[in-house]
Amino acid sequence: MIKNNVKKIVVIGAGYGGVRLVEKLSRNHSYEIALFDKNPYHFMQTDVYDLIANEVDFAKIIVDLYTLCSGLGDNVSFYNQEVKEIDFSHKRVFTDTQRFSYDYLVIAVGARTKFVKSIQGLNEYAHGVKALHRAMYFKQKFEMSLFRKVDASGAKCDPLNIVIAGAGLSGVEIAAQMASFAKEFYCKNHFLCRKLNIVLVNSSQKILKGMDIFLVEKSEKRLLNLGVTIKNNVRVASLTKEYVYLSNGESIAMDFMIFAGGIEPNGLIYKLDLQKDKRGFLLTNEFLQTPQYKEVFVIGDATILHKNEKIIAPTADVAEQMADICATNIELLDKGKTLRKHSIKSRGILISLGRNYAVAKVFGLFFDGYFAYCMKKFVEKSYAWHLDRKSKNGCQKIFK
Image (cartoon, rainbow, N blue to C red; front, side):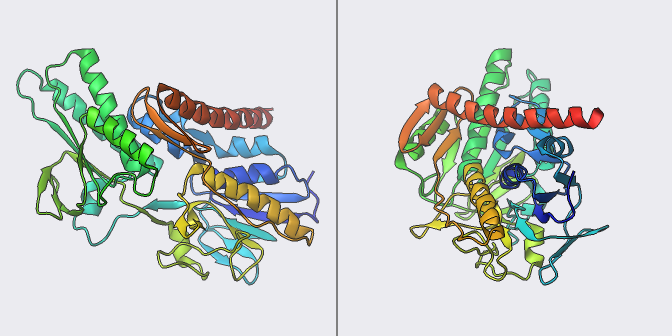
């Protein structure tokens, strides 16, 4: 039973950081925790490329937040509501229908694909895959395009043209997964029409900018072996329904395009009267607090962390490390003790490059091939199994 004198903690956003934080804090029964998200599910973003390549169905990459929060404890509540406004002076958050007070607030709303306004046609003709509904829509388009090619096999065989803009982690993984899936699809089913053109447009000299040369070279070799065309040192200038125009004057025919050229803060961040960096992300101190309010913390992709003047890549691993530090600091702050400075760094990078192949850097060691692929799958399935177990317990509680 929750007592009236407990501290109220509001967590906005149920991504990797938000879910991890709620789980950590739920163990302390002197806290009453309210988790807010506009979606009723937690979306495992790292598995989205398997979804598109038909390795998993969508039910395997989401977790119901009602049952999950029920499984975490009686001091956790989930509200399927979008936070519209925050009154920091009076410590309140507002949705369309309710207002809630807090003692501690954690902003974990993540980021979204940045559709650059200066690129004509980008909003109309490109797709992002950070949100589940966008990934599902793209998956359906991809499958229908494959079907149309199969349906026309023997009569004519026009190529299926896919353009991916952005050669960071997202762009590289999705290019490899789609090329690998399509190659296996055509070969296994012995179709005559096998023309698939995947073009990866990269604004830098090399793919995976800023990453270790081992990861870059192995990934590039894998993409080329899968038949992916890589165009370096060039940007997307504009789009029409059927063509992508590049900054070097070249035009590429396309059936559809995925834009993975960067991220920007989610909508709520723009409304908040908090200090931000030049890209609009929230600023935090060494304790992950906002500079203005010591009771307000920010974790995950809503803020950008630096180490040795370099940006720490916003991965699920980093978001979870931030959640652990944040949970510790809320408890320390509540007790009036000295907070713990974050020393967050990437513990590893696992890059899936199609079926049965991945490249990895884990605690300074490099791997590639099937072993690296098994490592990545083990990490993903362990995470999903853990949440599924909590969700199952919550479901049993609700139905009892």
